[in-house]
Image (cartoon, rainbow, N blue to C red; front, side):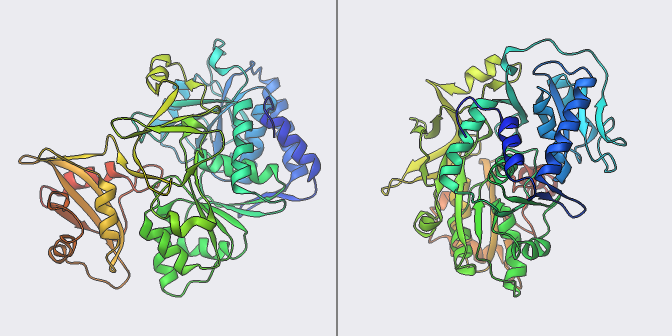
Length: 478
C-alpha cells in the first residue's frame, strides 16, 4: 500500500493474489476472492451502462452481506464515489442522504432484503431519477462519502480521497498487523468508518471476513471461537459480560476496541476474563481517516483508561481549553458542499476533535470528556467520564453512563444510568454513599436511573443524548 494508489486497484491485486481463498462469508453466502472480483466487475459494467459520470456519488446499500463488498468495489471501478447507506435506515434518513449527495444511482446486490424505498426489490444498479450532478472539485478521485454519526453535531458527509485513504490504511496496518489468511469477525457495520477499515485491511491481506448483520451476545461468543480477530465497541463487551459470567468460553484471539471510550474498569475485566486474548484500543475520527491513537495489546493493562499514544505521522496537541486536536497527512478532503464548516473544523491545521484530553506522566493520552458534554452543575464543570469511571469500580455495577440534564435549581443536574451486574441489586442511596469517598461532592450524581442496558443512539453505541431524552421522559426524579 502506497501513496497515490486507488482502493479498487489494490483490491483487484488482492483478488488476483488470493483468487481461490474465501474472501467474505455471511450466514447465507460465501464469496471467494475470484467471485468477489467478478461481481465487482459486473457491477462496474452496469454502472457504465447506466451512464455514471466521473466521480459521481453512488448510494451503496449495505448491511454486512458478502455481496455488499462487491458493490462498493464495483462503484470504485466504475469511477464513482461510494456512499454507504444501511438497509435499515428509515425513509427520512435515506432521503436526506440521497439529497445531500445528489445521488441518482444506487447499488444494491441484495435486493431481496428489506431496504428504504427505491433501494429494495431488485439486484444490481438502480436508477433513482434526476440528472447527473455537476462536477465537484472536492470529489475528484474520491473514494468515500461517509455520513458521520452526528456525535459532534448534525450528520455530515465526510469526503475521503483514494490516495490518502490508502496511505492511512498502510499506517494502520503497521500498527495492527493483520496477517495473511486471518479470519476476522465483522459485526461493525460497513456504513461506519470502523467497519470499513477493518473490512479493507482483511481483504488486502488475503483474510476472510466473517460478516454478521447484527450484534447478538451469545452468537458473537460462538463466532469468536472460530476467528482470529474481531473489532468491537465497548458497548458490545459490556453486553458480553452476562453470558461470560454465566460460563462463556475463553478467547485467545485479538480484539480491537474503538468507536467509544474504553473505561479502565472494562479493560481490566476483559483482561481478567480472557487472559490469553490480545486486546488493543484504537482512537480516531471519521474526519481524520480513523485510527490516530493506539493502545497495543502488550500495554493494555498499563494503558487502561487511556487512548495510548499517537501512531506514526500523527501530530497532536491539547489546546488551552483542554480540547484534543490532531494534525494528520491523511485527513478528510472536507465536508461535502460545506467549505465553511470544513474550515471551522480546523485550528492551524489541527482538527478539533471535540474531546477533552490530558497527558499522563507516562506519555499516554487520556480522554476526560467531550467539550459539548461537560456538565455545568451550579457553576462547576463536571466531566461525565469521571463520574462513570468512579461507579464502574463498584463490584455490582456492570455499566454506567452520565449526562447533564436540565435542572431549575442547578442549571444542569448530573444524571447517572447504571446497569447492575447479573444477580445484583443496586440501591441509589447506598451507591451515592459509596461514591462519596471517590468523587468530590459536586461530582456526585443528583439522579440515578437503573436498567438492564445503557440507552443507545442510532449507531447502537451508548449515547448521552439518548440518556438525556430518557431522563426528560421520566420526569425530574430519575
